[in-house]
Image 1: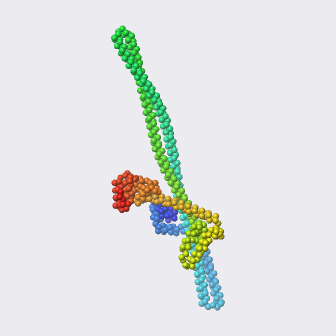
Image 2 (image 1 turned 90 degrees about the vertical axis):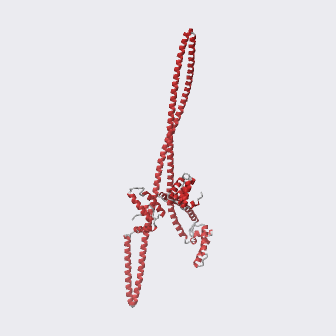
Image 3 (image 1 turned 180 degrees about the horizontal axis):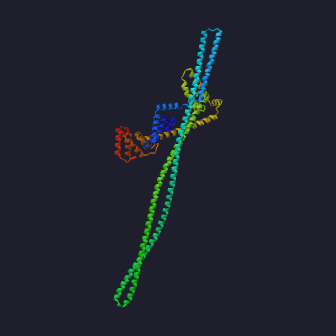
Length: 565
Protein backbone atom coordinates (compact mmCIF):
# COMPACT_ATOMS: atom_id res chain seq x y z
CA UNK A 1 0.00 0.00 0.00
CA UNK A 2 1.36 3.43 -0.98
CA UNK A 3 2.25 5.81 1.83
CA UNK A 4 0.49 8.98 0.66
CA UNK A 5 1.81 10.98 3.61
CA UNK A 6 5.38 10.07 2.67
CA UNK A 7 4.74 10.92 -1.00
CA UNK A 8 3.63 14.46 -0.02
CA UNK A 9 6.26 14.65 2.77
CA UNK A 10 3.73 15.54 5.50
CA UNK A 11 2.94 14.07 8.89
CA UNK A 12 -0.12 11.90 9.51
CA UNK A 13 -1.59 14.74 11.60
CA UNK A 14 -1.09 17.33 8.85
CA UNK A 15 -3.85 19.89 8.33
CA UNK A 16 -5.62 20.45 5.01
CA UNK A 17 -3.59 23.65 4.46
CA UNK A 18 -0.31 21.81 5.06
CA UNK A 19 -1.33 19.07 2.61
CA UNK A 20 -2.39 21.61 -0.01
CA UNK A 21 0.85 23.61 0.41
CA UNK A 22 3.04 20.50 0.15
CA UNK A 23 1.09 19.35 -2.91
CA UNK A 24 1.74 22.65 -4.68
CA UNK A 25 5.48 22.49 -3.94
CA UNK A 26 5.82 18.89 -5.21
CA UNK A 27 3.51 19.48 -8.19
CA UNK A 28 5.63 22.39 -9.38
CA UNK A 29 8.79 20.32 -8.96
CA UNK A 30 7.60 17.22 -10.86
CA UNK A 31 5.17 18.77 -13.37
CA UNK A 32 5.59 17.43 -16.93
CA UNK A 33 6.11 20.98 -18.25
CA UNK A 34 9.18 21.28 -16.01
CA UNK A 35 10.40 17.71 -16.74
CA UNK A 36 9.50 17.00 -20.39
CA UNK A 37 10.19 13.39 -21.40
CA UNK A 38 11.12 12.31 -17.84
CA UNK A 39 9.13 9.10 -17.15
CA UNK A 40 10.19 8.91 -13.51
CA UNK A 41 9.05 12.50 -12.90
CA UNK A 42 5.75 11.69 -14.67
CA UNK A 43 5.20 8.65 -12.39
CA UNK A 44 6.04 10.72 -9.32
CA UNK A 45 3.65 13.45 -10.48
CA UNK A 46 0.90 10.83 -10.88
CA UNK A 47 1.56 9.54 -7.33
CA UNK A 48 1.44 13.12 -6.01
CA UNK A 49 -1.94 13.73 -7.65
CA UNK A 50 -3.25 10.41 -6.33
CA UNK A 51 -2.04 11.20 -2.79
CA UNK A 52 -3.55 14.69 -2.92
CA UNK A 53 -6.86 13.32 -4.22
CA UNK A 54 -7.12 10.96 -1.23
CA UNK A 55 -5.74 13.16 1.56
CA UNK A 56 -7.64 16.31 0.54
CA UNK A 57 -10.98 14.45 0.83
CA UNK A 58 -11.97 13.90 4.48
CA UNK A 59 -13.94 10.70 3.77
CA UNK A 60 -11.27 9.15 1.54
CA UNK A 61 -8.56 10.11 4.04
CA UNK A 62 -10.43 8.52 6.96
CA UNK A 63 -10.96 5.31 4.95
CA UNK A 64 -7.29 5.30 3.94
CA UNK A 65 -6.12 5.84 7.55
CA UNK A 66 -8.37 2.97 8.70
CA UNK A 67 -6.94 0.61 6.07
CA UNK A 68 -3.37 1.63 6.96
CA UNK A 69 -4.11 1.09 10.65
CA UNK A 70 -5.51 -2.37 9.95
CA UNK A 71 -2.55 -3.25 7.75
CA UNK A 72 -0.08 -2.03 10.39
CA UNK A 73 -1.92 -3.52 13.37
CA UNK A 74 0.47 -5.75 15.31
CA UNK A 75 -0.05 -9.50 14.74
CA UNK A 76 -0.38 -11.70 17.84
CA UNK A 77 3.03 -12.96 18.86
CA UNK A 78 3.70 -16.67 19.62
CA UNK A 79 3.85 -15.70 23.28
CA UNK A 80 0.32 -14.21 23.09
CA UNK A 81 -0.99 -17.34 21.38
CA UNK A 82 0.59 -19.57 24.03
CA UNK A 83 -0.81 -17.37 26.78
CA UNK A 84 -4.32 -17.65 25.32
CA UNK A 85 -3.89 -21.45 25.03
CA UNK A 86 -2.75 -21.63 28.65
CA UNK A 87 -5.71 -19.51 29.72
CA UNK A 88 -8.10 -21.81 27.78
CA UNK A 89 -6.50 -24.89 29.36
CA UNK A 90 -6.82 -23.35 32.82
CA UNK A 91 -10.46 -22.49 32.14
CA UNK A 92 -11.13 -26.09 30.99
CA UNK A 93 -9.41 -27.41 34.13
CA UNK A 94 -11.54 -25.13 36.31
CA UNK A 95 -14.66 -26.30 34.45
CA UNK A 96 -13.71 -29.95 35.02
CA UNK A 97 -13.07 -29.26 38.70
CA UNK A 98 -16.47 -27.58 39.02
CA UNK A 99 -18.17 -30.55 37.32
CA UNK A 100 -16.38 -32.99 39.66
CA UNK A 101 -17.49 -30.87 42.61
CA UNK A 102 -21.03 -30.93 41.28
CA UNK A 103 -20.96 -34.77 41.03
CA UNK A 104 -19.78 -34.99 44.61
CA UNK A 105 -22.58 -32.61 45.62
CA UNK A 106 -25.10 -34.86 43.84
CA UNK A 107 -23.81 -37.95 45.63
CA UNK A 108 -23.95 -36.11 48.96
CA UNK A 109 -27.51 -34.99 48.24
CA UNK A 110 -28.54 -38.56 47.40
CA UNK A 111 -27.05 -39.73 50.67
CA UNK A 112 -29.13 -37.07 52.42
CA UNK A 113 -32.23 -38.44 50.71
CA UNK A 114 -33.06 -35.49 48.43
CA UNK A 115 -35.43 -36.18 45.53
CA UNK A 116 -34.14 -36.26 41.95
CA UNK A 117 -36.24 -33.22 41.12
CA UNK A 118 -34.64 -31.17 43.87
CA UNK A 119 -31.24 -32.48 42.88
CA UNK A 120 -31.90 -31.62 39.23
CA UNK A 121 -32.95 -28.11 40.18
CA UNK A 122 -29.85 -27.65 42.29
CA UNK A 123 -27.65 -29.06 39.54
CA UNK A 124 -29.30 -26.82 36.93
CA UNK A 125 -28.92 -23.80 39.17
CA UNK A 126 -25.28 -24.68 39.88
CA UNK A 127 -24.62 -25.24 36.19
CA UNK A 128 -26.26 -21.95 35.28
CA UNK A 129 -24.24 -20.14 37.92
CA UNK A 130 -21.04 -21.83 36.77
CA UNK A 131 -21.83 -21.07 33.13
CA UNK A 132 -22.54 -17.40 33.94
CA UNK A 133 -19.35 -17.17 35.96
CA UNK A 134 -17.33 -18.82 33.17
CA UNK A 135 -18.93 -16.56 30.56
CA UNK A 136 -18.18 -13.46 32.65
CA UNK A 137 -14.60 -14.61 33.19
CA UNK A 138 -14.18 -15.38 29.48
CA UNK A 139 -15.67 -12.02 28.50
CA UNK A 140 -13.43 -10.20 30.97
CA UNK A 141 -10.39 -12.07 29.68
CA UNK A 142 -11.36 -11.36 26.07
CA UNK A 143 -12.00 -7.72 26.84
CA UNK A 144 -8.67 -7.43 28.65
CA UNK A 145 -6.92 -9.08 25.72
CA UNK A 146 -8.67 -6.77 23.20
CA UNK A 147 -7.79 -3.75 25.35
CA UNK A 148 -4.17 -4.86 25.55
CA UNK A 149 -4.01 -5.37 21.77
CA UNK A 150 -5.68 -2.02 21.10
CA UNK A 151 -3.35 -0.27 23.54
CA UNK A 152 -0.34 -1.92 21.95
CA UNK A 153 -1.58 -1.01 18.46
CA UNK A 154 -2.24 2.58 19.57
CA UNK A 155 1.21 2.83 21.20
CA UNK A 156 2.88 1.45 18.08
CA UNK A 157 0.86 3.70 15.76
CA UNK A 158 1.44 6.76 17.96
CA UNK A 159 5.18 6.09 18.17
CA UNK A 160 5.35 5.52 14.41
CA UNK A 161 3.34 8.66 13.65
CA UNK A 162 5.44 10.70 16.04
CA UNK A 163 8.62 9.32 14.48
CA UNK A 164 7.29 10.07 10.98
CA UNK A 165 6.35 13.63 11.97
CA UNK A 166 9.75 14.18 13.58
CA UNK A 167 11.50 12.74 10.54
CA UNK A 168 9.47 15.02 8.25
CA UNK A 169 10.28 18.05 10.42
CA UNK A 170 13.95 17.06 10.52
CA UNK A 171 13.99 16.71 6.72
CA UNK A 172 12.36 20.08 6.24
CA UNK A 173 14.70 21.78 8.74
CA UNK A 174 17.69 20.02 7.15
CA UNK A 175 16.57 21.24 3.71
CA UNK A 176 16.19 24.79 5.04
CA UNK A 177 19.63 24.67 6.65
CA UNK A 178 21.05 23.30 3.40
CA UNK A 179 19.48 26.20 1.51
CA UNK A 180 20.94 28.63 4.03
CA UNK A 181 24.40 27.05 3.67
CA UNK A 182 24.15 27.25 -0.13
CA UNK A 183 23.13 30.90 0.07
CA UNK A 184 26.00 31.60 2.47
CA UNK A 185 28.43 29.92 0.09
CA UNK A 186 27.09 31.92 -2.86
CA UNK A 187 27.24 35.06 -0.75
CA UNK A 188 30.88 34.34 0.15
CA UNK A 189 31.75 33.87 -3.53
CA UNK A 190 30.05 37.12 -4.44
CA UNK A 191 31.74 38.98 -1.60
CA UNK A 192 35.10 37.61 -2.74
CA UNK A 193 34.34 38.59 -6.33
CA UNK A 194 33.20 42.01 -5.13
CA UNK A 195 36.44 42.42 -3.15
CA UNK A 196 38.48 41.47 -6.21
CA UNK A 197 36.51 43.95 -8.32
CA UNK A 198 37.06 46.61 -5.69
CA UNK A 199 40.80 45.85 -5.81
CA UNK A 200 40.80 46.12 -9.60
CA UNK A 201 38.97 49.41 -9.38
CA UNK A 202 41.43 50.66 -6.75
CA UNK A 203 44.35 49.71 -8.99
CA UNK A 204 42.74 51.47 -11.96
CA UNK A 205 42.05 54.54 -9.86
CA UNK A 206 45.70 54.50 -8.76
CA UNK A 207 46.79 54.17 -12.37
CA UNK A 208 44.44 56.99 -13.32
CA UNK A 209 45.95 59.08 -10.55
CA UNK A 210 49.42 58.35 -11.94
CA UNK A 211 48.21 59.22 -15.42
CA UNK A 212 46.76 62.47 -14.12
CA UNK A 213 50.09 63.21 -12.53
CA UNK A 214 51.81 62.46 -15.84
CA UNK A 215 49.29 64.67 -17.64
CA UNK A 216 49.96 67.44 -15.16
CA UNK A 217 53.65 66.93 -15.69
CA UNK A 218 53.07 67.00 -19.44
CA UNK A 219 51.04 70.15 -19.02
CA UNK A 220 54.03 71.60 -17.22
CA UNK A 221 56.29 70.51 -20.04
CA UNK A 222 53.81 71.97 -22.50
CA UNK A 223 53.86 75.24 -20.58
CA UNK A 224 57.64 75.24 -20.85
CA UNK A 225 57.38 74.46 -24.56
CA UNK A 226 54.83 77.20 -25.01
CA UNK A 227 57.14 79.60 -23.18
CA UNK A 228 59.99 78.47 -25.37
CA UNK A 229 57.79 78.87 -28.46
CA UNK A 230 56.89 82.35 -27.25
CA UNK A 231 60.56 83.19 -26.85
CA UNK A 232 61.32 81.71 -30.25
CA UNK A 233 58.46 83.68 -31.80
CA UNK A 234 59.80 86.79 -30.21
CA UNK A 235 63.27 86.03 -31.51
CA UNK A 236 61.79 85.25 -34.92
CA UNK A 237 59.86 88.50 -34.91
CA UNK A 238 63.01 90.37 -33.95
CA UNK A 239 64.96 88.56 -36.67
CA UNK A 240 62.27 89.34 -39.25
CA UNK A 241 62.28 92.98 -38.18
CA UNK A 242 66.08 93.00 -38.40
CA UNK A 243 65.92 91.46 -41.88
CA UNK A 244 63.49 94.17 -42.89
CA UNK A 245 65.84 96.87 -41.56
CA UNK A 246 68.78 95.28 -43.35
CA UNK A 247 66.86 95.07 -46.60
CA UNK A 248 65.88 98.72 -46.27
CA UNK A 249 69.54 99.61 -45.60
CA UNK A 250 70.58 97.64 -48.67
CA UNK A 251 68.06 99.50 -50.81
CA UNK A 252 69.27 102.78 -49.37
CA UNK A 253 72.87 101.88 -50.07
CA UNK A 254 72.00 100.87 -53.60
CA UNK A 255 70.24 104.17 -54.11
CA UNK A 256 73.22 106.05 -52.68
CA UNK A 257 75.59 104.03 -54.89
CA UNK A 258 73.69 104.92 -58.02
CA UNK A 259 73.69 108.58 -57.10
CA UNK A 260 77.33 108.64 -55.92
CA UNK A 261 79.66 106.55 -58.13
CA UNK A 262 82.68 107.45 -56.12
CA UNK A 263 81.62 105.54 -53.13
CA UNK A 264 80.73 102.46 -55.20
CA UNK A 265 83.47 100.25 -53.91
CA UNK A 266 82.71 100.98 -50.25
CA UNK A 267 79.03 100.69 -50.82
CA UNK A 268 79.38 97.41 -52.69
CA UNK A 269 81.31 95.91 -49.77
CA UNK A 270 78.75 97.09 -47.27
CA UNK A 271 75.97 95.70 -49.42
CA UNK A 272 77.72 92.35 -49.54
CA UNK A 273 78.03 92.31 -45.81
CA UNK A 274 74.41 93.25 -45.41
CA UNK A 275 73.34 90.53 -47.85
CA UNK A 276 75.33 87.98 -45.88
CA UNK A 277 73.73 89.18 -42.65
CA UNK A 278 70.28 89.01 -44.22
CA UNK A 279 70.83 85.43 -45.34
CA UNK A 280 72.06 84.46 -41.88
CA UNK A 281 69.00 86.02 -40.30
CA UNK A 282 66.71 84.30 -42.81
CA UNK A 283 68.37 80.98 -42.10
CA UNK A 284 67.95 81.59 -38.40
CA UNK A 285 64.28 82.47 -38.96
CA UNK A 286 63.73 79.23 -40.85
CA UNK A 287 65.43 77.22 -38.12
CA UNK A 288 63.43 78.93 -35.39
CA UNK A 289 60.18 78.36 -37.27
CA UNK A 290 61.11 74.73 -37.82
CA UNK A 291 61.87 74.22 -34.10
CA UNK A 292 58.61 75.90 -33.18
CA UNK A 293 56.62 73.62 -35.50
CA UNK A 294 58.35 70.54 -34.11
CA UNK A 295 57.67 71.65 -30.54
CA UNK A 296 54.00 72.26 -31.35
CA UNK A 297 53.69 68.83 -32.95
CA UNK A 298 55.41 67.15 -30.01
CA UNK A 299 53.23 68.93 -27.47
CA UNK A 300 50.04 68.17 -29.40
CA UNK A 301 50.97 64.45 -29.82
CA UNK A 302 51.77 64.07 -26.12
CA UNK A 303 48.55 65.79 -25.13
CA UNK A 304 46.42 63.63 -27.45
CA UNK A 305 48.17 60.47 -26.20
CA UNK A 306 47.53 61.37 -22.58
CA UNK A 307 43.92 62.29 -23.31
CA UNK A 308 43.39 58.98 -25.11
CA UNK A 309 44.90 57.04 -22.20
CA UNK A 310 42.81 58.98 -19.73
CA UNK A 311 39.63 58.35 -21.75
CA UNK A 312 40.31 54.60 -21.89
CA UNK A 313 41.09 54.45 -18.18
CA UNK A 314 37.91 56.37 -17.39
CA UNK A 315 35.89 53.96 -19.53
CA UNK A 316 37.41 51.00 -17.66
CA UNK A 317 36.66 52.65 -14.30
CA UNK A 318 33.07 53.38 -15.36
CA UNK A 319 32.62 49.75 -16.47
CA UNK A 320 34.06 48.49 -13.19
CA UNK A 321 31.90 50.92 -11.23
CA UNK A 322 28.79 49.60 -13.00
CA UNK A 323 29.93 46.02 -12.33
CA UNK A 324 30.55 46.83 -8.66
CA UNK A 325 27.06 48.34 -8.48
CA UNK A 326 25.49 45.25 -10.06
CA UNK A 327 27.44 42.92 -7.76
CA UNK A 328 26.53 45.05 -4.76
CA UNK A 329 22.83 44.89 -5.67
CA UNK A 330 23.03 41.13 -6.21
CA UNK A 331 24.96 40.77 -2.95
CA UNK A 332 22.36 42.82 -1.07
CA UNK A 333 19.52 40.79 -2.62
CA UNK A 334 21.20 37.51 -1.68
CA UNK A 335 21.94 38.80 1.80
CA UNK A 336 18.30 39.79 2.24
CA UNK A 337 17.16 36.40 0.90
CA UNK A 338 19.65 34.66 3.18
CA UNK A 339 18.41 36.61 6.19
CA UNK A 340 14.83 35.75 5.24
CA UNK A 341 15.67 32.03 5.00
CA UNK A 342 17.54 32.19 8.31
CA UNK A 343 14.58 33.91 9.94
CA UNK A 344 12.27 31.30 8.42
CA UNK A 345 14.50 28.47 9.70
CA UNK A 346 14.64 30.10 13.15
CA UNK A 347 10.87 30.56 13.03
CA UNK A 348 10.39 26.87 12.16
CA UNK A 349 12.77 25.83 14.95
CA UNK A 350 10.97 28.17 17.36
CA UNK A 351 7.53 26.86 16.37
CA UNK A 352 8.62 23.21 16.65
CA UNK A 353 10.30 23.77 20.01
CA UNK A 354 7.35 25.83 21.29
CA UNK A 355 4.82 23.20 20.20
CA UNK A 356 6.80 20.58 22.09
CA UNK A 357 7.03 22.77 25.20
CA UNK A 358 3.33 23.70 25.03
CA UNK A 359 2.44 20.00 24.83
CA UNK A 360 4.58 19.42 27.92
CA UNK A 361 2.89 22.40 29.58
CA UNK A 362 -0.54 20.99 28.73
CA UNK A 363 0.44 17.75 30.44
CA UNK A 364 1.62 19.70 33.47
CA UNK A 365 -1.64 21.65 33.58
CA UNK A 366 -3.58 18.39 33.63
CA UNK A 367 -1.39 17.15 36.48
CA UNK A 368 -1.93 20.45 38.35
CA UNK A 369 -5.72 20.11 37.93
CA UNK A 370 -5.53 16.56 39.23
CA UNK A 371 -3.47 17.81 42.20
CA UNK A 372 -6.04 20.54 42.96
CA UNK A 373 -9.15 18.38 42.48
CA UNK A 374 -9.48 16.93 46.06
CA UNK A 375 -8.77 20.34 47.67
CA UNK A 376 -10.72 23.57 48.21
CA UNK A 377 -9.09 24.85 45.01
CA UNK A 378 -10.65 21.98 43.07
CA UNK A 379 -14.04 22.84 44.61
CA UNK A 380 -13.75 26.33 43.11
CA UNK A 381 -12.35 24.95 39.83
CA UNK A 382 -8.98 26.75 40.02
CA UNK A 383 -5.36 25.66 40.37
CA UNK A 384 -3.55 25.80 43.70
CA UNK A 385 -1.40 28.71 42.38
CA UNK A 386 -4.42 30.79 41.37
CA UNK A 387 -4.33 34.49 42.26
CA UNK A 388 -6.83 36.11 44.65
CA UNK A 389 -8.57 37.73 41.67
CA UNK A 390 -8.93 34.38 39.88
CA UNK A 391 -10.39 32.84 43.04
CA UNK A 392 -12.94 35.68 43.37
CA UNK A 393 -13.96 35.37 39.71
CA UNK A 394 -14.36 31.58 40.00
CA UNK A 395 -16.41 31.97 43.19
CA UNK A 396 -18.70 34.57 41.59
CA UNK A 397 -19.40 32.33 38.57
CA UNK A 398 -20.16 29.29 40.76
CA UNK A 399 -22.49 31.24 43.06
CA UNK A 400 -24.30 32.57 40.01
CA UNK A 401 -24.62 29.02 38.65
CA UNK A 402 -25.82 27.23 41.83
CA UNK A 403 -27.32 30.10 43.87
CA UNK A 404 -30.78 30.00 42.28
CA UNK A 405 -31.21 26.21 42.44
CA UNK A 406 -33.23 24.53 45.22
CA UNK A 407 -32.34 20.83 44.80
CA UNK A 408 -30.31 19.11 47.51
CA UNK A 409 -27.29 18.45 45.26
CA UNK A 410 -26.99 22.11 44.28
CA UNK A 411 -27.46 23.23 47.89
CA UNK A 412 -24.71 20.84 49.04
CA UNK A 413 -22.47 22.01 46.17
CA UNK A 414 -23.04 25.66 47.10
CA UNK A 415 -22.26 24.94 50.78
CA UNK A 416 -18.93 23.37 49.80
CA UNK A 417 -18.16 26.36 47.56
CA UNK A 418 -18.91 28.81 50.39
CA UNK A 419 -16.69 26.80 52.75
CA UNK A 420 -13.82 26.67 50.27
CA UNK A 421 -14.06 30.37 49.48
CA UNK A 422 -14.18 31.29 53.19
CA UNK A 423 -10.82 29.55 53.66
CA UNK A 424 -9.09 30.69 50.45
CA UNK A 425 -10.28 34.32 50.52
CA UNK A 426 -8.59 34.87 53.87
CA UNK A 427 -4.79 35.24 53.53
CA UNK A 428 -4.00 33.67 56.89
CA UNK A 429 -6.51 30.88 56.40
CA UNK A 430 -5.17 30.20 52.91
CA UNK A 431 -1.54 30.06 54.12
CA UNK A 432 -2.48 27.61 56.86
CA UNK A 433 -4.52 25.52 54.42
CA UNK A 434 -1.64 25.47 51.89
CA UNK A 435 0.70 24.29 54.62
CA UNK A 436 -1.76 21.53 55.59
CA UNK A 437 -1.76 20.15 52.01
CA UNK A 438 2.03 20.44 51.65
CA UNK A 439 2.23 23.50 49.37
CA UNK A 440 4.82 26.17 50.22
CA UNK A 441 4.65 29.87 49.32
CA UNK A 442 7.91 29.50 47.37
CA UNK A 443 6.37 26.82 45.14
CA UNK A 444 3.32 28.97 44.48
CA UNK A 445 5.55 31.89 43.42
CA UNK A 446 7.61 29.62 41.17
CA UNK A 447 4.49 28.15 39.54
CA UNK A 448 3.08 31.63 38.92
CA UNK A 449 6.39 32.65 37.33
CA UNK A 450 6.23 29.59 35.06
CA UNK A 451 2.62 30.42 34.11
CA UNK A 452 3.63 33.97 33.13
CA UNK A 453 6.61 32.62 31.16
CA UNK A 454 4.46 30.12 29.24
CA UNK A 455 1.74 32.71 28.57
CA UNK A 456 4.41 34.98 27.02
CA UNK A 457 5.77 32.04 25.01
CA UNK A 458 2.26 31.19 23.78
CA UNK A 459 1.75 34.81 22.69
CA UNK A 460 5.02 34.74 20.71
CA UNK A 461 4.01 31.39 19.22
CA UNK A 462 0.70 32.78 18.01
CA UNK A 463 2.41 35.85 16.52
CA UNK A 464 4.93 33.64 14.69
CA UNK A 465 2.14 31.36 13.55
CA UNK A 466 0.12 34.30 12.21
CA UNK A 467 3.18 35.53 10.28
CA UNK A 468 3.81 32.04 8.93
CA UNK A 469 0.16 31.70 7.91
CA UNK A 470 0.33 35.03 6.04
CA UNK A 471 3.39 33.99 4.03
CA UNK A 472 1.82 30.60 3.38
CA UNK A 473 -1.23 32.47 2.06
CA UNK A 474 1.03 34.74 0.00
CA UNK A 475 2.82 31.69 -1.48
CA UNK A 476 -0.53 30.10 -2.25
CA UNK A 477 -1.78 33.27 -3.97
CA UNK A 478 1.43 33.55 -5.98
CA UNK A 479 1.19 29.94 -7.11
CA UNK A 480 -2.49 30.26 -8.03
CA UNK A 481 -1.87 33.56 -9.81
CA UNK A 482 0.95 32.04 -11.85
CA UNK A 483 -1.33 29.17 -12.87
CA UNK A 484 -4.00 31.60 -14.15
CA UNK A 485 -6.43 32.04 -11.23
CA UNK A 486 -7.99 35.49 -11.85
CA UNK A 487 -9.18 35.93 -8.21
CA UNK A 488 -5.68 35.17 -6.95
CA UNK A 489 -4.15 37.53 -9.54
CA UNK A 490 -6.41 40.40 -8.43
CA UNK A 491 -5.83 39.74 -4.70
CA UNK A 492 -2.06 39.52 -5.22
CA UNK A 493 -2.17 42.82 -7.15
CA UNK A 494 -4.06 44.46 -4.26
CA UNK A 495 -1.40 43.20 -1.82
CA UNK A 496 1.36 44.80 -3.89
CA UNK A 497 -0.73 47.96 -4.37
CA UNK A 498 -1.41 48.51 -0.67
CA UNK A 499 2.04 47.37 0.50
CA UNK A 500 0.97 46.42 4.03
CA UNK A 501 2.60 43.04 4.77
CA UNK A 502 4.77 43.12 1.62
CA UNK A 503 6.75 46.03 0.14
CA UNK A 504 4.63 48.25 -2.08
CA UNK A 505 5.33 47.58 -5.77
CA UNK A 506 2.99 49.43 -8.14
CA UNK A 507 4.55 47.81 -11.23
CA UNK A 508 3.78 44.34 -9.87
CA UNK A 509 0.28 45.47 -8.84
CA UNK A 510 -0.50 46.77 -12.33
CA UNK A 511 0.92 43.61 -13.92
CA UNK A 512 -1.35 41.28 -11.93
CA UNK A 513 -4.38 43.55 -12.47
CA UNK A 514 -3.72 43.30 -16.22
CA UNK A 515 -3.45 39.50 -16.07
CA UNK A 516 -6.77 39.23 -14.23
CA UNK A 517 -8.41 41.83 -16.49
CA UNK A 518 -7.54 39.68 -19.52
CA UNK A 519 -9.96 37.12 -18.03
CA UNK A 520 -12.73 39.75 -17.64
CA UNK A 521 -12.33 39.96 -13.86
CA UNK A 522 -14.52 42.93 -12.87
CA UNK A 523 -12.66 44.06 -9.72
CA UNK A 524 -9.30 43.76 -11.49
CA UNK A 525 -10.59 45.93 -14.36
CA UNK A 526 -11.69 48.56 -11.87
CA UNK A 527 -8.31 48.46 -10.08
CA UNK A 528 -6.45 48.65 -13.40
CA UNK A 529 -8.59 51.63 -14.43
CA UNK A 530 -7.57 53.48 -11.27
CA UNK A 531 -3.90 52.68 -12.00
CA UNK A 532 -4.22 54.24 -15.48
CA UNK A 533 -6.07 57.31 -14.15
CA UNK A 534 -3.44 57.91 -11.41
CA UNK A 535 -0.42 56.77 -13.45
CA UNK A 536 0.49 54.10 -10.89
CA UNK A 537 2.60 51.26 -12.33
CA UNK A 538 1.56 52.27 -15.87
CA UNK A 539 1.79 55.38 -18.02
CA UNK A 540 -1.00 57.78 -17.07
CA UNK A 541 -3.94 57.61 -19.48
CA UNK A 542 -7.26 58.81 -18.14
CA UNK A 543 -9.23 57.74 -21.23
CA UNK A 544 -7.97 54.15 -20.97
CA UNK A 545 -8.62 54.12 -17.24
CA UNK A 546 -12.22 55.28 -17.60
CA UNK A 547 -12.75 52.65 -20.32
CA UNK A 548 -11.65 49.87 -17.95
CA UNK A 549 -13.91 51.22 -15.18
CA UNK A 550 -16.92 51.31 -17.52
CA UNK A 551 -16.26 47.68 -18.51
CA UNK A 552 -15.95 46.73 -14.80
CA UNK A 553 -19.33 48.39 -14.11
CA UNK A 554 -20.96 46.41 -16.93
CA UNK A 555 -19.55 43.20 -15.41
CA UNK A 556 -21.13 44.03 -12.02
CA UNK A 557 -18.34 45.69 -10.01
CA UNK A 558 -20.16 47.78 -7.35
CA UNK A 559 -17.21 50.14 -6.82
CA UNK A 560 -17.07 50.82 -10.56
CA UNK A 561 -20.81 51.53 -10.62
CA UNK A 562 -20.38 54.16 -7.88
CA UNK A 563 -17.33 55.74 -9.54
CA UNK A 564 -17.87 59.39 -10.54
CA UNK A 565 -14.37 60.28 -11.76
